[in-house]
Structures are given as structure tokens and as C-alpha cells.
Image 1 (tube, rainbow, N blue to C red):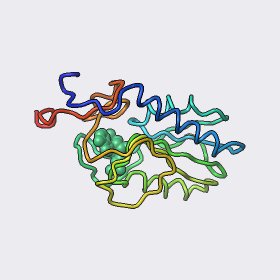
Image 2 (image 1 turned 90 degrees about the vertical axis):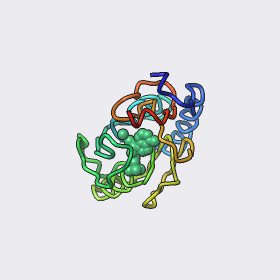
Image 3 (image 1 turned 90 degrees about the horizontal axis):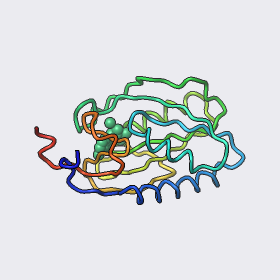
Length: 179
Ligand code: IMP
Ligand code: MG
């Protein structure tokens, strides 16, 4: 796998620092509230696992899976729910946990969808933000780091379902996309 990596953008230590900082902010902002974290599978799985352990108030968790890119590196713009929540979210404070926001289409759809289910509030948290390719405006309360328009993998994030298990976040060599 390492031979496919072009550059490591965030190593394990850098990621841990970002996650700890966001966890502290969430702890302060949601103290005394009924917080439900909704992780977006599969990409946010690793981030979610680390982030929830840096939040020092009671939280509940749930997951949704939505289709985004399929096996390509371009968003289709069509969002489909592949796995839905287990319980009603009426009256709950929702924090969507995303790995990366690119065009914004996925998060925009999810926020609208969850608001329409009667949540008390819906906010979002993303580890990485790639604003260069944004197609719709989305409001993110917590952003780990803003990155340029490079396709990245690792720490849960894939290319064609590979590289999710890398403990760091890295760009791939161009030849990986063409082979
Ligand atoms: P959006 O709908 O275009 O904002 O895309 C959001 C989803 O696309 C993310 O949750 C990721 O699963 C995927 N994605 C966006 N950028 C990248 C990337 O650089 N590498 C891998 N997946 C990405
Ligand atoms: Mg993906």
C-alpha cells in the first residue's frame, strides 16, 4: 500500500490533535443537551470512533450509509440512503459526523433530510473540508482541516474501497487512478 502513496498529509499525531480539539469544542457546546452523533458510513467510521472518545458528555450514536461516488473519484450528485437510522430523532440534537466534504451534495442532502424528521437541531462536523469543488452551500460547525483539491485516502477514507485502513491521510500517486 505504501508504494501507492504520494504524500502523507496528516500523520497519526496530527490527526489525534485535530480530533482532540474538535472533541473539546463539542463537549463545551453540547453540555446539558441530548446529543446524537450520526456517523456517515463507511468513510467516517474511523473518525467517529476516535471523536466520540474525546467527547466528555453523554452521547448516543447511530450511523447512516449513503451512496456518493461509487467506484469513481467524481460525485454523481445523486444521493441515495443505503442504511437508515435505527430510531426516531424527533427532539434530539443531531451532529452529523463526516469524513470529508467536497461538492457538499451529500451533506446538504443529509442536513435537509434530518431537519425534516423533526430534530431539535442539526449541525455537522467534518474532519476535512475541500472547498474548491463546492457545488452547494453547506453549513459546517466543526471543520478539522481545510485541504486543497487533492484526492486523499486513509483513516477510513477510500479510493475504490481500498486504503481505508491506512492510519494516516495521504494522497495517491497518479498512476494508481489509471491502472
Ligand atoms: P460530496 O458529496 O462531494 O461532498 O462528497 C462527500 C463524500 O465523497 C465524502 O464523504 C467521501 O466519501 C467522498 N470523497 C470526497 N472527497 C474525497 C477524497 O478526496 N477521497 C476519498 N473520498 C472522497
Ligand atoms: Mg467514499
